[in-house]
Image 1 (cartoon, one colour):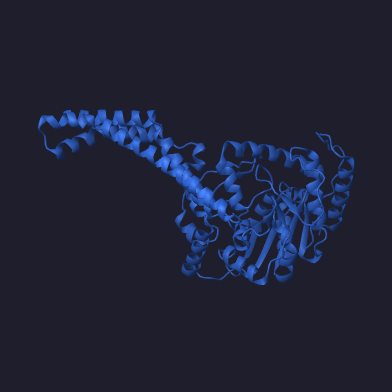
Image 2 (image 1 turned 120 degrees about the vertical axis):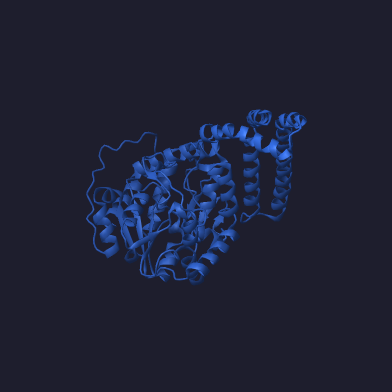
Length: 449
């Protein structure tokens, strides 16, 4: 009985010290610091001097975290072990004392695991998961190595055909992607392949976790789970091109070579069978669309657009929301950077299609977003029309099945007419910008196929 009581008391003391010292917080901080350090040292376009300074700073931070964690561990083990020391004087054998002590601590451990540590929605990006993503998605060489293993184990036969869904963020590209993904002919990367989008088949066999649908961070009512399709192939382009199109805080239009396109197909589309259609959503794709489409006649670009005023208002709301989220969680900011998503938020980067300068630079204003809408779709209209399917957001919402069938078959799409009356602008806006935006909007309507 003394040994059982000692085990029970030790468990209580250990759990008390575990919470009182903030041990879990110390472990979380160490894991996140470790992941962030490795990620920062593997970022592209870092000056050697900056990289050295970051390495020194991160090494100091890691040593501090490890030292604090070690002190807390020793303290908890020593103090919670005092009841064992007391029991050792009763003359029992060590094996007997330990066995009975473990028996006594078992109820406390069971209660703690099942009651105090039940998972919550806040555990979606736990410290361990953040560290894992930093060490895999944040290190390009890890992804490339995983991709080579995937092709070696599962075969190297990329898809022959592809559909790229693009458009300015908030145009309705996710809805279009889901409509096309519901067709058996298509294959698309899903959340289940994360954080190894370049090894989709191999990681899918490992990641068999169950998931429940939750609302995505956009808070727009769309639910996602592990099997939901999403935009992940910009990560592949970022690795292939080594971010050479990242310049001066912007994303520049660029050309891709035949070799880079073949590399993209091997890394991004290998999860699809040669007979299926590779499906992707990439809001950045317009930056390389011209050169890509010239060299890939078997690929189709689906451009989704939306009423410019409503679109700009939605972008402004999302920018404010994601700035708030990224201030609360640095990992969300880094995660978006790793995926190459810079549409809005603290890591926002403008698209630069031509050399023209923007007039509005305050992302917290309506004019900023209507000007970006105008620049994006005005450039889109200069691309070869025979390779692009231009589809209005209303057509996707009103008759998604017909739209998907028409896109896959290459047929015409009935576009619903829509009145622009009654659209209200909640902020002061520049009338000339809106007038010019609607001129482009009507060109898009006339170009619908």
